[in-house]
Each structure stands twice: as C-alpha cells, then as structure tokens.
Amino acid sequence: MIAPRFLLLGCLLVSAQGLVGSGSAQAADNPDPQIVRLTEVLGALDADPALADKAALERFKARQALADARVVRSRDRAHALILANAWVEAARDAAKAELLDQQSAQLDRERDQIMLEASRRDAELARREADRLRLQSLAREEEAQRLAESMEQGRLAVENSEAQASQALKLADARAREAELARKEAELAAAVAADSAGGDASPPPSRQSGNRTIYTLPGSAFASGSARLTATAQASLQSMAKAVGRQKSVRVEAHTDSQGADAANLALSQQRADAVRQVLLAAGLSSARVKATGKGESDPLTSNGTVEGRARNRRVEMIVE
Image (cartoon, rainbow, N blue to C red; front, top):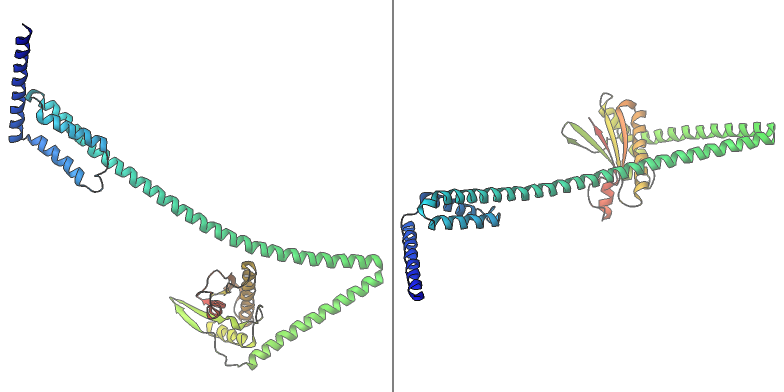
C-alpha cells in the first residue's frame, strides 16, 4: 500500500516541475519589461568604473531578487518586481553613497595636508621672527650692560673722591668730543671720497617690474663681513637719490648668501639695509618714504653652491614705487 502512494507523489512533483519549467520557458521567450529595465540599470551600475566595486551586498541582493522575479508565479510577480526594484535602487544608492564617502575622505585628507603645510610655514615664519627679536633683545641687553658698567664706574669714581669723579667726567667728555670729531671727519672723508669717485657717478643697475623700478647694489659695495659702504657705492646711491626724486617711496631690502649662521646673516643684512637708507636720507630723501629691511639668506636669486651663485645672492635691492 505504501509504494503506490510514493508513486503518486512522484508523479505530482514531476507535473509541478513541468509547470514551473513551462513558466520559465515562457518568461525567457517573453521577458517582463520591468525585469529587463531593472537588469539594464544593474548592468549600467556594474559598467560604471567609479561604482563597479561599491555596494557588493546590495548588488548581490538585487541580482537574487531579479532571479526570483523571473521564475515566480504570475500572482506573486507584482510583489517580486517591487522587491527587485527596491533592491536595485538600494544597490545604486548604496554605491553612490559609498563613492561619496570615499571622495569625502579624500577631501579630508587633502585638507589636513594643506593645514599641515600652512602650520609648517607659520612655524618657519615664527622662528625667523623669534630670531630677529632675539637678536634685537641681545643688542638691547648688551647696550644696557654697557650703560650699567659705565654708571657703575661713575658711581665708584664718585665714592672714591669728587676730584676723581670730576676728572673722570672731563676725560669722558673729552673722549666723546674726540669720538664725535672722528665721526664727522669720517663722514666728511666718505663724502669727499664719494665726490672724488665721480660727481657723475651712475646709479646702481636697475630693472623694471610692473610700475616699480628695482635698483641693485652688489655685495662688493660693502667691505667683507661689514656694513660699511665703499665710496663708489655711496656715490652711486647719491646719484640714484637724485634720479628718484623726493616724491617716490623706496623699500631697501638687503640679502646675504648662506655662508655663516642664519642669525648673523640676518643681523648683517639689516645693518647693510640701514647703511644704504642713511646714505639715501643724507642725499635728501624723506625718512618717512625710505624703509629698510634685512632679509638674511631667505631669498636667494640662485644656488649658494658655487662662488658665482653666492656672489649674486649678496646684494641690496632698492625698490622704488
């Protein structure tokens, strides 16, 4: 009795499989337009190089839902298509969202890199400013120390005796007058030397940059390692002052090569810029219109690796606007 029942059940299963196979064959012959459309959307998503590797799970679910929609019974097809459409849309949205997340992360990394570079530049500028202020502070401390020592010497002289104090004051006054006379003689000698270098001395070489004229003194305009201008350089600057006139503004920028310590180069360049400014003021330019800045070795024209390169980098530029 048991065998006939199994035989009947097998026949029913075969009949059901035949019906399903028939339905699948009909679906293959007459594909549903919605399934075709969803398949194309999913294919376009796969073909997009920017999205092809995104939303793997949603893409798998969408393919599975489309496969189910192709073989589902007619009465369940509407629901299967809704589900397949939802998974296809979810795959596309998830892929775009993942791409946006990657792009956002890349932008964040680029922004962090820009901020890091800006911080490095700010730190370098702060270091240079700190070096400049430190040099100024050292100069003030040395001057204060000299003044303190001078006052201490005077106090000791007063404590010893009024006569000795008076003699010390007279001696100090005489030395001050001698120093002043020596300074005036040096200035007069420099002026005479400048005149003898040629009353028709030419201004320093110049070039145009927009509406600005840039005059350039070479490093040879100064004694080696000092801020003392040669007589020829003074005469050239005086000629430049005449050519510029009193209505123009002049920015003096002094540069050094990379030889020596940064702080020492910065100090020397400031001293040279100040020396050039003093000559221009003495030639008649307004102090309010002439500014002087020492740049040190921070702005070379060329490599400091050769003698010629270092010679070009040692210069003073007068920028007339």
